[in-house]
Length: 179
Image (cartoon, rainbow, N blue to C red; front, side, top):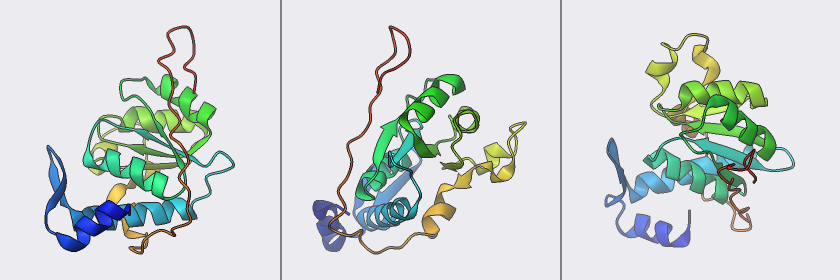
């Protein structure tokens, strides 16, 4: 975890560090989630581009996925949550992302985009109940965020991991978005 946050987690582990309309996370929670996310990203086969994408509305998990990816030495690709499945698939394929993070608002489009782009790993938060109701999506198409994190180590990522820059895409007003 970044030094400033690790210091806060040690000094005030129960203080609220991150809040969204559905939850409050303490510094200790954030430390745990970031370490686990970074560990799992480091262990993943992300290919030569070393990229993951986040296709979700604003939520605590959105921030944790982006920062966890960076701490795990990957490049994080924000995908605008307003995009269609086809538009998101283009960005996933063009960016060579290997993991896609989704929220409940984007899970259906995200799974379709991942299938079209050849992304095998889709991780989602607050999606379990939704996935069961979406026609054409198997229950195992989306890995639950908490189940995924539970597989990671709580140890700090190595200090020598160098984060890659985020890959941002234009809006594509003159054609396809440019990364």
